[in-house]
Length: 426
Image 1 (cartoon, helix red, strand yellow):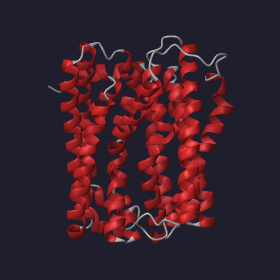
Image 2: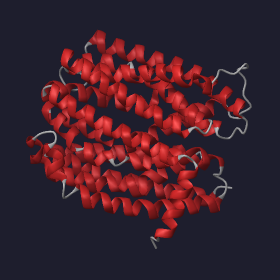
Image 3: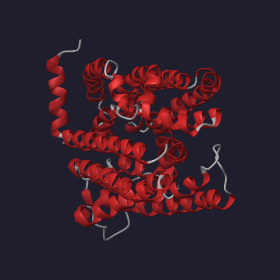
Image 4: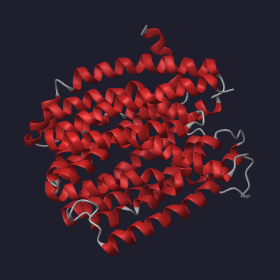
């Protein structure tokens, strides 16, 4: 069933569309992210860092909706345009609209948190939220650059942009964390995407020139563009930010910033492996959107994905679980207390590796991001119920059990929604 010959064919197809560039970029970014996290743990006290991390999770829930999700619409509907000039015209028209929305959202959230000093459920979090909400603006600019690179078929630039972003983030942590502690750590997250966008404009600005005309030939209503962007943002929320849900519940229910920090760091290794399905589906997304009506191609893609990531999941578990104590000691021996929660999270992420990472993206590629969003909403509701029951009783282990179950459940729901929808579509 899981033949090596078929896996070789999958990898050859991946290489043809510059997929290795994407994997290299995202893998390098994860290494740099790990280094930045390790550095922050060494430079900032767990209590102060916990407040910054808690604020980051609040922003993480809002961040996918930056620019009303128009960066998703640009990737989906821009790929339907055959002419490069038309794609660029469409990209820049959404870029202008999304920029205005992102700036508006940043101003409103910053004013609310800064002027009214809302603690957002954890004392001392308001100032961090007021600062970090400007990520909505800076990150939208960064994401639109990367979307443009995907639309013109330059996955290598997409990958290099990812590396640049995390290089700037590491630089920010190195420079600002020793000076201003957790505030400097938070500031790095705001400045890194802005500096990356500036660098990309300087290095590769000629790749995405502004069109001479503002018109494009895409036949999609404005309502549909916003609808797709919002639903896709919601669908991506839980798959990418499930740990953020748990961190918020830990902060609310246990009211100990140190536990927020500890849970963040025991999840770093398990979540790091998710760069693989993210990179794989990112490299194929435009192609999947273009060929979404070719059933043989789509079902063959599904079969190859499962065969490849089944073995990746087994390899990950065979390495990550036995070496778990060693990985946790990289941050501090105090994390060894939570090894059981670490193991549960490792099992949970295989649900995203094998199922969720595939079908969530496929639903978006065929234009049914609303169904992916429904799966996420069900997961969010169950996550809230389970966390409210398990965290007060079992602490971080209860949060890990909830995450593991929701990761698998949302994956299976997405798979059911996809097959049911795709089988009946014309």
